Image 1 (spheres, rainbow, N blue to C red):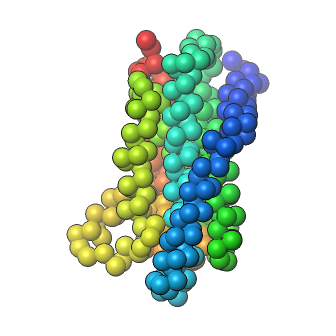
Image 2 (cartoon, rainbow, N blue to C red):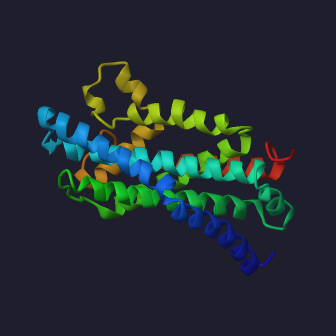
Image 3 (tube, rainbow, N blue to C red):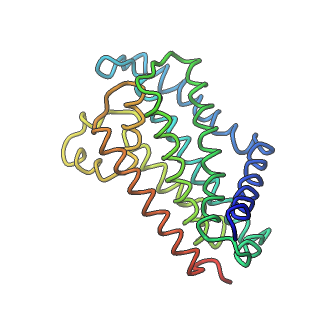
Length: 258
């Protein structure tokens, strides 16, 4: 395939997914917005008024970055996992894509881009919703955008791995429920890791989402529990490893060939 044909293949995959996201917005965008609003109301407003500040920062401002990332991570992951699983078992159009001359990396980029679009859309909506419960300052807008984008890429890639291996709907729901959500909650959404006793402080540093939340928090507040370079390094390493894993699975046809 020449460059133009590759772009057409990529664009077709992305367009189909984005149209689905927009058309089914009550299912794809609204639930996370409602859930995040409840979090802001309960944790940011009710509990936040009792907790007061974390350092010099109002508690609402402290938890907001973590709640945004919770929405981004779960939506990017579930979007790609569900879309790929549906294409594999129900519409079966993945077979048409695989037998076409479309390179594996283009297929990966197409499905992942759909997850990135949904992750970014949900992230922006949740940030806008947080304005109804308080104000936040932006310390570094470039860092905020970079973490939103790369986090969406990482968990879209992770969702694709899940979608490739899943054999039923339980297979694509068990990971977000029993793996991703606990990792996000234990990654420092509602607290600073510095208040934890040992060995929990050390254990927290093995949770990759800990670095994502803290890097994103730095973009708003200008501080985090770990260095910004460490957070970026973890994100980039995850993106590379997951892309290579997907590329291997696509080329070998593992979980794809019936």
